[in-house]
Image 1: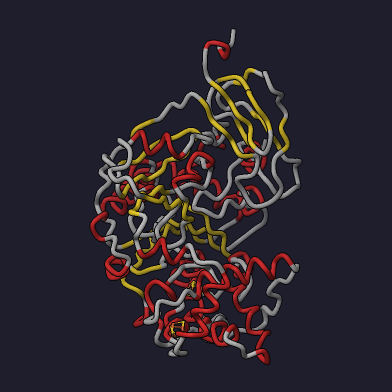
Image 2 (image 1 turned 90 degrees about the vertical axis):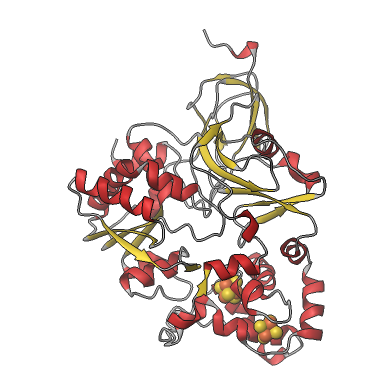
Length: 448
Ligand code: SF4
Ligand code: SF4
């Protein structure tokens, strides 16, 4: 098997949250291979942990990946302040005599946004609506690179390292089989310390809010990075709960068109024609300008406009998310990739300092909760989604009653289709198949 076949067979997808199938990303040639170890979401520790403890695997995998795509430069982007991670990588580079270099960025948000990183390292602008490959760059998250290393040794993706913090007894990193219920992960760190809480799945800026009542439906997937337990009255959660009509009504009554959301928008600052204040104005009744709504397709959902910039508590990011969904349902894509503005000369001065952002989010009290090390969880049951990635769901190749071993292929996609294979994350018996494959451990599952 060649490298792409091994990555495809192992079901590797972007571990940083996007879930794009990695064998497709690495198909072709590119001048740059960039590895994203920036971890720009406040509070999360997963990528830093991986960088510290898997530095040799990262460099070895990068050499093979770089060779495959014929990269002239192989660079890892990470924050200047993360000195332990920098040291671990430098030692690995020296020990392996590798050509990989490090690029250190300041502590701003969203330094880990793929297109920010491409600009910071290469000074190339990804065109609006485009992808890094359009400018000769392949970007992979550091967790994905470790999964590639494992895939090259024929180990499929079966587990995920997740940061769990907030209002829990023992904030920690948990190494969980894919399909582990989120509830079990929270139990593993001692459970919540408060009665009235909600969960953010992912980071505080871009994560998804889960009600307590929905918790039993949610499981760890190949892209889960964080589980944050917050008091239900936390202001961030209130903003994430509004529907489109409520948001539009608020924008009509209190958006003062100051344009600060646009002035600080990271995508606007790298020259993309995305103007959240114009979108807000259009929603307030400027029907002549409906074409402006297409700009929402350029939004990376970083949340700077609503959490940091807006003085009026408006929610331009959430509005953009709703508009994007509506446009995509209509099959509308952003196609005018010829529009190319200069990078804003004020960009350096308008970067959002990560510490100020954390204070603005009222989350400073949760910083540094998670110490080095992790605990492993062994659930009695996992519920593995057939779709944890961009593209088609995988097709089950096991039946109810099948005995499966950890790492066994249980659902697959056809070679050439956009999607990713799925493997059993523990030994057991398949008890149910719907949009998930359920595996139960127990006496019945003993394989002779
Ligand atoms: S920053 Fe807030 S008030 Fe100002 S234009 Fe943007 S949404 Fe409106
Ligand atoms: S969330 Fe706001 S600040 Fe971020 S890219 Fe979208 S419009 Fe710009």
